[in-house]
Image (tube, rainbow over all chains, first blue to last red; front, side, top):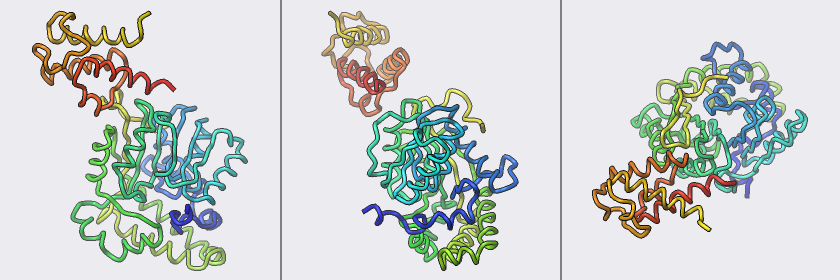
Length: 286
Length: 86
């Protein structure tokens, strides 16, 4: 059953998330490093950053894994004219994205696959680019996931992956068995953080050439601070929609933000499906 | 009428002959790569690399590793060509 796989935190009313996320409802790190000041600006900057690393110019065929409330799917379809397939195990999120795409007049460019990524059947070598933004943490087998992604990529197609990581193997060994990590599993369903070394090895084992690694730790901390400000400002309303959500989410954010840079990091990796790698310097921000 | 694979076979034979400095006649479709005169892993990889560049393709890593005969190299090219066609 799809419902059994969908973790309960994400598959809730969009109203909750509309109240504290940015206007695109992107539930992953923004990018402040380009000089963005507001959360909305930072999230747009991040989407452009991803598109730049994927080498997108417009009109490409892109797969977005773990689409959330559709920020990447809609950005690609609407602003870059891409043909996008989004993957989410949440029927509610899929319906939300399709509704937004329809309202924006790009329903013909968006297709949502409602299933866990492992169960989706897509034609091999059919995508110019794949984005997996803050989603690998929810997949137990990174090598298998990356191999599956590679099979879907055209030759010289590009991949963007971002993931929270333990700062070191020692941190992973120490903190993974702790209650806070278990709490995260209760909230999000399967979730586990690799180290950056683990991730790099997974890319190697999958035959994907890494073209860039970007440290987004500071950006994520600032993003979560922005979310927490908004949760605080709309606490009463949040409680009316879903009692306890604000408290639980805020507590999780406190833990995450305390750990950035000490025991946890957040990295973006780009890769290309080509044995010689990028022939020009890695993507620029659009 | 010659098949596309005939042209590929000729290209593969020519590349092997050039790399190993032998006559193309000495390279048969059934020849085992390791048994060809002066063949070693570096030279054979150079041939694979030249084929990839000549055809603008990338071959499957496992298939490269498993290639044992000239016919296997032809199959390598065909497989990569077919993978591109949609």
